[in-house]
Image (cartoon, rainbow over all chains, first blue to last red; front, side, top):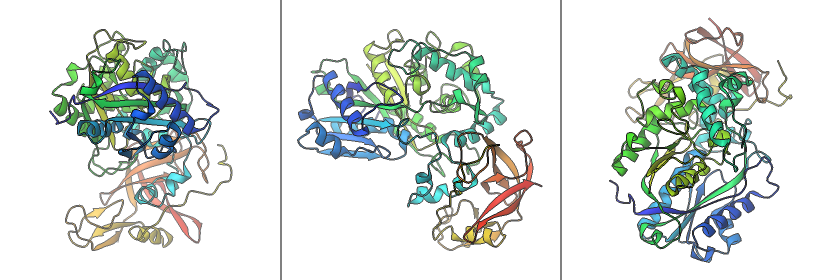
Length: 388
Length: 136
């Protein structure tokens, strides 16, 4: 096990409401979420000495610190690759508190991703950034491949071809998410479950992806408070110990367009999975519940394979018969996921993992002692195993 | 079919390591990087060879034919400079490298994995020519 396994814990979670138009700035959203997370665990901004977020967040660590009145920061970091960074924020926070570099680190992510700059649209800014990512995007955007959905569709089509997967197999992920969201009052799609027929009837966005294969665009923010295991024991909430926290990047890695490997897919999640099981000493069979990043449904199937829940090409069989719904063999995304609850770049999924360990999920898995959480796929990514 | 709002096509970022490719398309050539150290072909190009670490990189001119490895029919949302739907393929060139290309004359219902394509060139203006693919 890694040196910091179970040496740190998530002790506080906080969020704004999830909407399509927050009516306030992204910075305000993040500050609101941080205050809520601190209140959740009985701490105040004066206790905070570390902040971490993602490269795509428009609110800098120092701006958040200023609004909160945080006196001094001893640790701050900003992790690359968008949603792939979600679990890595907790990894860096855990390493910081486990080593004594900082005492209280808050991970945050806030955006107006529906009412402001929409992530589902073609981003000219992404194509023209002056760095190697911009140079990489020269091989796709000018050819018309310029939305997240289209880049995933390219992978999904090949997956269908190689393994005989169908659109209905992808749809089962959406049905599970929306079933779980239907009982979650915080979910945008509260009380609005869908059927597989609804999925099939939804309009095509980028063949083979239907609209209901794609996550929402949401406004909102989520924050997580990480402290050492020792300090966690003195705080009011049941700690969610960080049993493992890993990042992963694969051979010939690109951002959303790792198309030049012999076997395309998402081997970077395999890197994360192997490291999570090594650090934690646990196995896929030990996980009673999982939160798998679901910006697009096909990648949930591919993650199940990369993480070792089933063999390559076997995920369509794995998700059949409600196996990933509450009551099934491995309930996935019990908050409703990013298709059902909100798309806060994976941070809301980490909060759900914490709720499962506290026993407070709206779709609680009885006696959940461990939960696996993953971050954005198709990009360099990250993951967590949290334990009670 | 729906118009793309008249916006200009997204232009590629071009750097020292990739300029040869775009100079090639303007000249009607599909150029693939070739390592002068070990002979390996590579796409996308870069300044060093991941296999032998040589910085001496040249190129070959591809024959211009390949096979569809995967594809997307992009229907929504609009893409600057393009008419929807767009058929975009991941193409295995006969030389053994893979690249993304817009397929110009194959319909959304006709495109399939394994289809043979040949490259053509679509001149946007004096500064940009894009590869474009047609049924071989």
